[in-house]
Length: 350
Image (cartoon, rainbow, N blue to C red):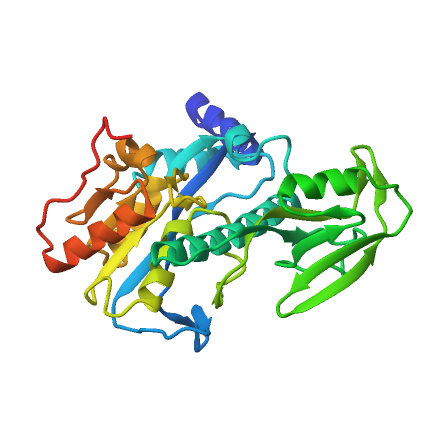
């Protein structure tokens, strides 16, 4: 046996061991991949995603598609080979771990935050759509999430409108923190809530924690709607980035005619109570998913415009969309004439 062959025989298991060890090493990055798209004007399991009680609805063949990304879970990073594969794939992206999952966030923490953001996003989207139609929609405070195993679990529910806590009348989210933070741990505290059409008084006993008394709810901005609109979506789809598309979907369902002209429009962006569209993560992956779903128009938050230009969009038009009103105007203009001039994304657009 030659020395070269002997060296190869000796080196082979060492190389295999090195590769196996490297496969177990994680680097502090998060992988983004194109996710699914969902037509908010459509149905899931035979049920309309947007349902309305107390107002006439208008249905058509158009599509308004929210876009998502697949994000690697918060378990400390991704493997070396996974990171290398993402780096080589033009449709994927790597982001520093701490910018996506701050403060050693657990999967449970991430799920609750995402769920609360989705509830807030949906309710805000409905309020903005109604405001666009001319309705007055007063703001309230509501429950966005309830922590399992905490005192409020089983007593308060998501979307309970908070009216009074103890002796404090609740008008804002800050009032909720003040009322609970000033309570005595171990002493029952009365919550007066509006749950649907029913007003209830619920007793919850705050628990002592290092951060003061807690009951285990995530409060947020709610709204007093003139009629009922519900957005039912797969609970695995979370986060606030579908706000703009929810708002457009609700607006389309509540107004005569087809906003999209029976075509397919996709987009992304958070929405605030004033109707402003905010930035999101994974814009390039969302554009890839939308183009593959057949969308010909994509609505882009202004702060994501420069990054969006690097995505393989094909012949899909990228439209700079600063507000809900601007989105409605752009889609209506495009519906009348697909070649009409629209606000374009540029490297300077923001």
